[in-house]
Structures are given as structure tokens and as C-alpha cells.
Image 1 (cartoon, rainbow, N blue to C red):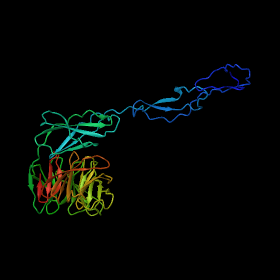
Image 2 (cartoon, rainbow, N blue to C red):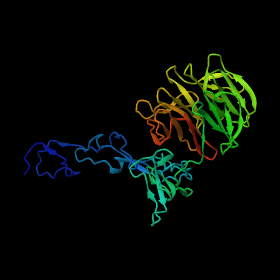
Image 3 (cartoon, one colour):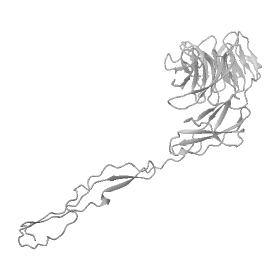
Image 4 (cartoon, one colour):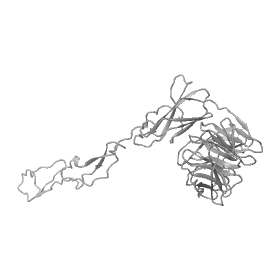
Length: 446
């Protein structure tokens, strides 16, 4: 029996009645009814992480049912109003890269320099490594074997050392990116390593050593001397073709096939001859320059070293105007010989600092090798071959040294070295067939 004067209709959380209680008393003064509060969605959260790193992912954000909170049996928010989704990372995922270019192999002694071009299709991601695969004739399974198992090669060249004589080799290259390794390149031309032999020697008097040499487009050999002998032109069998009856220090073949000489004793004059040894003209550089080493750039300019100012200069071959490219007075101590490689970089041998430097035509150093590491001793003659190997003669160590870039990293460039013992190497050059000619203080070796 209800005998309270005040009856209160309370909506419990587990439900509520829409009608007042069934009263059995006539003592009710009033009803107090609480109205339900329905919940409302609040503020969205930040978008969550994408479900994929590339290619059609989803991103989600949520919000709470707190604006207001549901109360007094009010309804909860619709769940679809509390979750939102959108697409993300709609860009295509990288594919594996395509095949690199056909590898080219140059062999010197028992070292193969393998070079290639990047794939035309990188798959949409940076090429992070190249795998070098080799097949050799003494492998009876005729299988390809990866040779750089523990070495990452981000560049486009590789030195394969310790080749075995009379074994046939071929190489192919596989590019790699974040998606994986792609298809291999075509295989290189097959080659067999045969140890080089001395083809011919020509003696030169001990009082008149050969100081520099170059090879003409006809295959003739032009030599210079710093002391009593005059410059001469020999044919491929070292038979004398012509005595120029002039004393020159260094010589280079220009881009148009002429011969350019620096004078002995030092002067600021460059002499031009035909490749057959006929004089053409001279140009005069500024009077404070004393020319020593000389080389030819692909654009027709000359690059020279100055034994007095220790500078390196580019010379306009038409008028003798010079531009210094060595960036400071102490960049070199005794720049002597010069060479220009396949990238038009300039290689300078620094005799007293026992190093070589490779610089561009603006004078910025690209790589150096030697000083401080006991690697070189009195480097003099320097030349390059068609694959970028640097070949130099060391007077102090009596070596001919092969230097090649092993890494194209912008932060570190290493050098790979191969040495051959000779007698006091002075100048080196390569012929049009890539035979190396080496001059010594007491003679010439080929």
C-alpha cells in the first residue's frame, strides 16, 4: 500500500515507463518526472596511420558519444556516426627495376673492370644496389654465381680481381630497389684472361732518358727528353720515323690530331706539330708561366701545369689565353704530368707530395690518392684508358700503378690498386689498341 504523499516516477537506466505508477491511494499531491537525454557525437580525433605504405590504403578517425553523454535512459549514438574512413597512399607501389644496360668489360692484367648503365625503368624507386653475376668456363654446372655477396654496389662499375688464366668469363648485372631484384641484364661478351707479355723494347741512352710520350692517331709513338736528346717519332715497331731536332719536355695529342709540346728548358710557349712531325705554329702564354705537363681536353682546349707557380691552367689553344683552375696556391706542391679521362676530368701527378688528384675543369677535387698513406712515392707519368683506369709511373717505388674508382658514393670514394714492378717508371701512355707503353729513367719498355 502506498501511503507517501509524494510519489516520484524515476527512470531507471535499464528502462523507463511512459505512464505514471498505478496508484492505490488518493493522497498524491504531484508527480516529478525526469526527462531522458539522448547522446550526441563529439569532436573528431586526428586521422590515424595509413594501413599501407603505398597503394590504396585506409585511414580512420573516431569520436566519442559525449556531446552530450546519454543520460536518464536516453539513447546511445549511432555507431556509424562515431567512425570515419578515407583513402590514403593512392600512389602506385614501386615495382622491381628493369634490367641494366649491357655490361662492358675491360681487362688489364688479372683485373676486369666491369661497367654498365642504369636500367631505363627503376620501378619507381631508387636503385640501392647492383648484384654482379659471373659465369666461368671451368664451372661445369654452367651456373651464374653472384660475386659481391657482402658488398653493396650503388654505382655502375665493379673491379673483379684475381682472374684465372685461360678461363673464359662472362658477366651480367641485376639491379635492386626496395621492391626487390629485377631481371638480369644481357650477359657481357665472353673473354679469356691472358697475362700480358712484353712485346718489344727499345733502349735509350742512360744520359738521355725518355721523359714523356704520346701515341698519334696513326699509332706512331712520339717521345720527349729533358736532357741531351731531341724529340722523336717512332712507328709501332720502334723504328725511327723522324727526329724533330727540338728539345721538348712534355707532349700531348690534341683533339684534332695535332701534337702540342711544352719546351725544354721551361718557357711559356707551346709548339704545335702535325702528327708526322711538321711544325705548324706556336702560341704564347702569359710571361709568368713556365709550362711543364700538358694534356688535351675534348673541347679543344689544353690543360697545363706550371712548375714555378705550382698552378694548373686551362689554355685556349687558339691564342694562349690561360685560366687558372687550381683553387689555391697550396693545392699542389709540384704538379708534373697531366692526363684527361673519359669524363673530361683532369688527373694531376704531384711529385713531391706523392699523390695524384682528379679535379674537374672548375678545379674542384673529385678524388685523390697517395699522400699520407704511404701508397705512392714520386708519381710522375700518368694516363688513362677508355674505361677510366688511371695508370701512373712511380719513380720512387719503381712501380706502375693502376688506380680505379671502386665506389661512386658522394661521401666516400675508395681506390683499387694494382702494381707492377718495373725500373724507375717515368712516363706512361696507352696506345689506340690499349697496349701500355712505359718509359723509364734508363730506357723504354712496351
